[in-house]
Structures are given as structure tokens and as C-alpha cells.
Image (cartoon, rainbow, N blue to C red):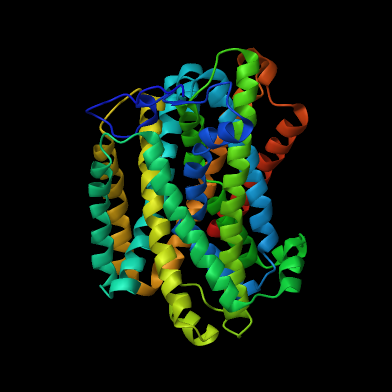
Length: 440
């Protein structure tokens, strides 16, 4: 089999710039083997769509409104597929990630502004990971929440342990964690027995529900939790770990298999998010507990409502796996953003240490100031912050991928570009409403 050796580096264990083109996808392979060799980048991106920040918004949406906001998760999932598809095409066609392309095409002041906003999104994401993992420690081990927050700083040791490992090994670890999350929720849904009619009803868009301002607030939170800005930078880079030819036919073939990868991965992430909301609706809302907004409350109520102690244990295990899987992709995304916008390379463990340090301070301050029961509100707030950052990543992505001088025959078709711009306008409108609500 044709196989390229993985590059060795003393400075970075699994950063995309160090392993670009390291996973060969030879042209003569059968379809299924090509699909397997191409799979992986979509999974790393999908992890960000099922991190602890999603849990808080989905649990509150399900407990308060039942299945009614399920269609929001579905629409956001399809929107995420479109945007990640654009990011993938940018990386495969141009050989540059979104951050590097912005650095080459925009003025230095604009580049620094976009970099700062992207870093803010990384920190907001990591705060959600810290809070989710700390809560998992609290639920599984009984340690105080503040101590759980401090324990999350140890994940840098995990990153150090991956030093010298190839990108496929990292993808395999993430696959194991994602499979754990999916299996836990599959068992919990089997225990909870949700209403099929309720699920079908919730999948039908009902704009009238947004007459309730809190429903719209949660929808914006779901949007921020689903379509994450740093994932657009990440995907445009990690997709380049697949070795493809330089000709147009080879690129078309690579795009086809990368499309399968991202659609399958994000479909799985959408199903997981839908499962969280469905579990909340089938247990809490159906039992009259419409005010469940905290993950720890959901954990404590699951066993008595479902009558199965395993439901609560599986919930906590899935939460821990969710936080840990996001650790890997957060590290890689941070490195991509640094290298892309600033052309700055530092060891991945240092990048992890900086990001986690910036997240620990506000997470610990929030827990100490607002108390243990404020975790859900803090998680929802981080997802709203991510939604506010989204337009600053989507605008250049759509502009670059629609530019025929840059993309050539791979420029985004007008219909899909129109759909992307419509999504951009929807996000901006929702964000402006949210800002107006804050200052009203």
C-alpha cells in the first residue's frame, strides 16, 4: 500500500501544519477504502458540535418547551453542514486555511481584529469545556465544583502524552470518545421512551414559538452551540492532512469524499444534540419539571423519573467524554488560528496551557461568585458569545469561496452561496435582537 511516513517534530505533537498531506489517499483504492481514508477531519469538527455548551441549551430547551425547539437543532445542523462544506472546499482547493487566507487578503488591522475575535471564541468554547468537565468530576467523584474546575487544568498532561503521535491516532481517540457519547445517549433514550409523535411535531418549524423572547434566546444559544466559529478555521486546515493530487479531477474526487465525511459526522452530532433535547423533553417536561436549566439538576432527576439509576451514570459519563473530546479539537483549532492569522508557531502543549489558563479564571470566578447552580446559565452565555462571533468568520468564508479568481471551477454555486448569505443574515439579525434585548 502506498503510504507516506508521518513527519516527526519536537515542537508539536499533532498540529495540522506539521502533518499536512500525511494521510495518503491513493487514486486506485476502492470506493469504501477511499471513504475510510478520507474520514476523520469531519469527526474532529463534529466534536465541537456536541461539547458541554450544547448540553445546557438543549436541556433547558427540552425541559421548558418540550419537543418544540427540536426543529432549531435540525436547521442549525444543516446550516453547519453547509458552512463546514465551504470551509473544506477552501482548504482543499487553495491549500490554505481560512485564517491564512484572511492574512494574505486583508489589511493588518483587520487581520488582528479577526484574530482577537477568533481567540475569544476559542476561550468561550474552552470555558464551556472546563465547566462541563468540572461538573462531570463533581457528579462522578463527588469533588467540589471549584476543585473540579482546577482538575480540568490537568488535561495538558493528556496533550503532552500525544507528543509524537500521528494525526490518525488523535482521530481514533476522538472517535472512541464520540462513540461513548452516542452510546450513552442511545441507552438513555431507550430507558426514557420519548414520544414519536412529539418528535415529529418538534421537527416541523414553528416560527410562532419565537413570540416568547426566552425561546428566541435559547434558539440563539443553540445556534451558537451548533455552528461554532473556530470550527470553520479548524476544518479548512485539518482537511489538508489528506494527500490529494493537484489536478482538477483529483480535487473533485477529494471534495466528494470529504463531503461524505462531513455530512456523516455532522449528522451524528445533530442526532446527539437532538437526543439531549429529546431526553430532556421526554423526562423533565413530560413530568412537569419545566424549569430544569442546570446539568446537575438533570443528573439528579434522571434516576427517579426514569426509574433507572444507570440513566444518571451514563449521563455523567457522556458529559465527561464530551468535555475531554473537545480538549483535543480546541488545542488544534487554537494552533490553526495562531499559525493562520499571525504565522506564529508554538508547541501545542503551550497553546493548550495558555487557552486553558484563560478559561480557568472566568470559570472559577463564575462558580465562586454565582455558586454551583450557575453552571447552566454560564454555559448558555458562552454559547451566545459564540453566536456573536459567528458573522466575523462566516463573512470572509463566503467571500473567499465565492471568488472565481481564487476558487476557479470550484467557486460556490450561486444557489448555495445564496443559502449561506441567508444564514449569515439570520445570524446577524438574531444577534442584533439579542444585543437590543440586553440594552433595553
